[in-house]
Picture 1 (spheres, rainbow, N blue to C red):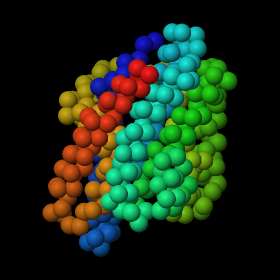
Picture 2 (cartoon, one colour; picture 1 turned 60 degrees about the vertical axis):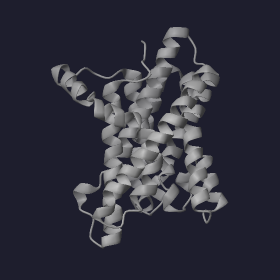
Picture 3 (cartoon, one colour; picture 1 turned 90 degrees about the vertical axis):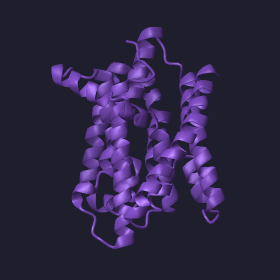
Amino acid sequence: MQMRDRIPALDGVRAIAILMVIFDHLVNALSQRQHFEIPGWSLLGQPGVIIFFILSGYLITSRLKAEYESTGAIDLKRFYVRRFFRLMPAAWAFLALIWICHPSLSVREIQSAVLFYRNYYRGNVLTAHFWSLSIEEQFYLVWPCVLMLAGFKRAQWVALAGIAGIGLWRSTHLEHFSIVGHGYWTQYRADALFVGCWLGLRGVPSFGRFGEFAAQVLSWRPLVWIGGLSYSLYLWQEAFAFSVTDVWSVIPAVVSMFLMASISHYLIEKPMITFGKNV
């Protein structure tokens, strides 16, 4: 099975997920500044992150499976080098600039984001979104080793056990989960990644004509472009979304986050991805 680097329809899914997150954060910022209650229908950030988690689990598992079927092995060194250059340079550039602009941020907070354990650290809102990036990075460190040790057939049961176990753990610790900050802990949130892993191991089922129509819609060029920016957008959206003070500041904030995400994507993210592939 061959996996292309970019699948347009999946970029469309990424676009929807990041737009959900951005919308949620803009509404949240406005509610805090204008003192109104957040409407339930606007709480789209968490579902958006869940979509990202499922996609991550699916794509990483599918690509590792394709590599194993093609070569008979998984090259862990190659995997980790590519992941490093895919994620770290853009994230570290964001953190460096944020720290320069906000020197009051503590060394420990920056360290928790740099080393991807921010989901276990309570800190400033400017780095709060690193909770989900931390969970993904922890997943990248562990899951390839699980595949190598358990094998792809047994890994299906590991994924199912992860889905059931984390879901059960969360349901029996709702009071602890509801505490601000604790809901970002890996043991409460990694089941979405395991869902993606299971889909990647089993293969995605065909949905016939509906699936073809959905793929065409999701492959719409503006969505694909936004999906391509999704990682850099996720890095930068928090800083600009929470600078919103009223409805008139929304458009400048959105334009600014897209501008900075484009700079990050084209000047840092893409060159570093290419470099990582050639190391």
